[in-house]
Image 1 (cartoon, helix red, strand yellow):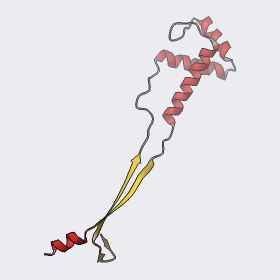
Image 2 (cartoon, helix red, strand yellow):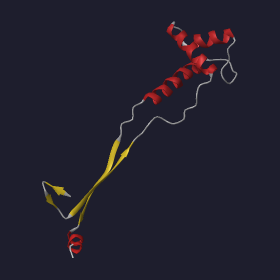
Image 3 (cartoon, rainbow, N blue to C red):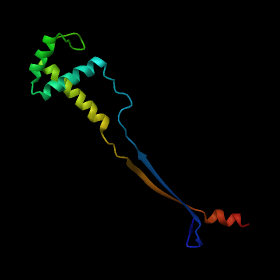
Image 4 (cartoon, rainbow, N blue to C red):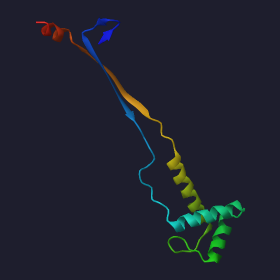
Length: 117
């Protein structure tokens, strides 16, 4: 290592780890029907309808859940909640984390003495 023209008989090594996190690599995609249901539900919510009213409206229109069942209010709420949580997870910012810092100094005095021989 050199500093201001002088030389030192040591190597200095700085070790550290950086951890990067990112959103999950794989999240199941919505089918076209699932996305249609979510979009329809949010449109109905914007019109001021409750979850129970939306369930009743979808049932009257003949729509069934993805598993082929009639809708209930709590099912409508679940669809909206799960989509919101999935979107939040994908948009979350993960800061990098620096850790495991260490400094290693290797004295080369003896090595340099033998090189000169």
